[in-house]
Image 1 (tube, rainbow, N blue to C red):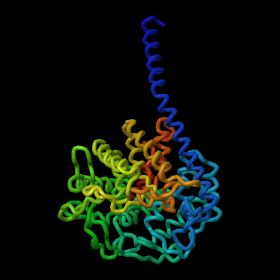
Image 2 (image 1 turned 60 degrees about the vertical axis):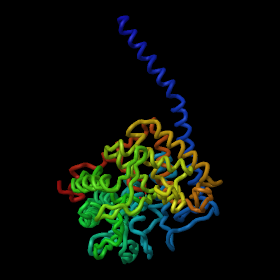
Image 3 (image 1 turned 60 degrees about the horizontal axis):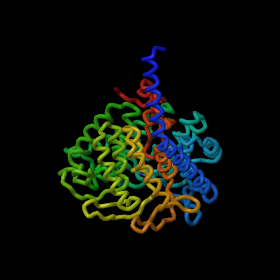
Image 4 (image 1 turned 45 degrees about the vertical axis):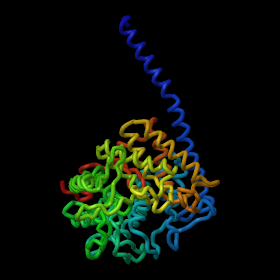
Length: 467
Ligand code: DMJ
């Protein structure tokens, strides 16, 4: 090799080793934290198995269990499954697969909440089928989907709040917009796997039923009557109660490339930025306004709204995503955890519970992946440190009754398995490249679906999408 070239090679190699050496503490730190999150997941899963196996939810203080309804729907294991796959806990995941195949049956005379079972049970089972390609899992999934489809039998096409798993009866004609129209992803994926467009059609009809009732300002209200289509609450916002309606317009478009969804998203996000955004030099909140006048009705937000930076980042609006995330991080730091409901004008919590929710962590993960900015990694460190400090119990983790006193609450929601621990793990393993967010779309319960497994041409036929 000529001398000159040799010199360049040596300089290049030295630079690489300096950079690696500089990065070593960070690599070490992320290795340690991701292992810790995984160990804590295992510890918490073991607690669920010891104290709550066969039931929906672990009660982490009384070391007992609770079911959502008169009989268990096994929501914790179904929700936990995809996190096990992401963490490489394959033996534990196989146990759940076997359990679903051998022991779960949906013929239960129970009224269940359409929205909640869609994102957790249908979403979790679809992820299980994606990982296993086992036709027996698909059978259980489709059986569940067929039962859920009956909820959509309303004059507007918007599903009823409750449906009976066994009889198909429905109840509850008042639903919020998230409950009305957050089905595109799960039902689209079910249509794809079963080659039956009926599911996607129903989900899309429900979303369109909401959208066609938007105001002249292109804003939707909060609560709608599934029988008359009348708005029962005209507050417009991105908070709990509407949140995943917007999330699914964008994410279902990403996954299925249905142009109708993109048009609705584009029009909606413009209206959101025009009427809801409340920006100062250092903060960006999204307030509540009347859907017709666009006038502010309240500055009360919910910690669920912290999903929004992730969607903004995914849709390419990094400046707003970063500012909105910093605003949420400010609230987290004010207490050490976030209150569920907070008024950013008075600076007081309206409902001080922290339920081990994932949204702010989810957004930190998206922003870290998309920008590479280490400040989002450090946010992850802070979230994890505080959750350990205030929510860890001797067997698992618990919600907190009041973020001002940090008094614990005897409950651990299933999304702690599905979402919170998964997003923390993904932040801390991001530098390893073992999971590439660019290849996936997550449902609102953090069940990841691989984009490449949906062939564009097949999608059109199986979902009945007209391009
Ligand atoms: C989850 O069940 C879902 O993300 C839902 O869309 C709203 N938020 C909870 C967790 O906070």
